Amino acid sequence: MMKWLFPLTVIMMLLFPSQALSHAHLESSSPSGGEDVEEKLETIELVFDSGIEEHTTVTVFDDEGEELEIAEEIVDSPQLTATLAEPLASGDYTAEWQALATDGHTTDGSFSFTVSSDEAASSDQESEEESRDESENTSTVEESVNEDIENEASENEVSESDETAGESDDENDNWLLYAPIAIVLVIGGYFVLRKKG
Ligand SMILES: [Cu+2]
Image 1 (cartoon, rainbow, N blue to C red):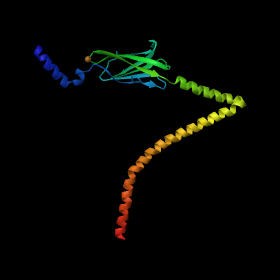
Image 2: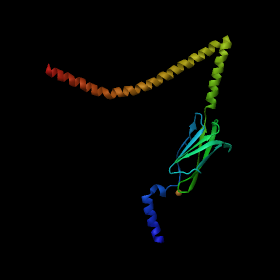
Image 3: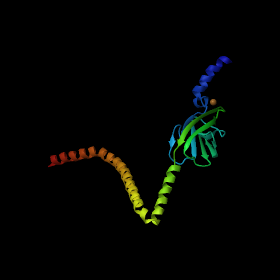
Image 4: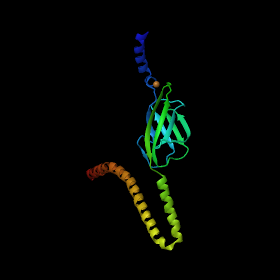
């Protein structure tokens, strides 16, 4: 009996490679390990390299080891999506996952990421809005604030024109592709016309 076990295992592995190697390991995640997230973050997505069951779970800790409340975990094999009760504040976090693979084996692992968001950016926007409100009230501050706003506006214009420049670059690339064909057609047409003439 035992002497059949090894060849049988090899045959099974060749026939059903995914089943034979179906412990679930983390294939990718969002945020990924080491990622610095600069946007509002309240969902963590984990994609595993094999099918996972409902018991697959992820826990998020802040840099003081405090566990963050997760409002919802959805297993859509091979993906697990965890939605936090509140968006993460700026800081360092560790996500610890435990996966139950469809073959019944559990695996676990963790990855760390940083949030440097959002909180800072949004409070900047708020203070800008506040200073604009103030400028309506106090005339002495008004001019300098208006200058600031104009500067910001021109910066925005520059960045917008940069974007449009980037878009038109693509169009230029297309044009460059067609240019040799157009030149060949024009030169060819010239010679054809000259022969006829
Ligand atoms: Cu397994």
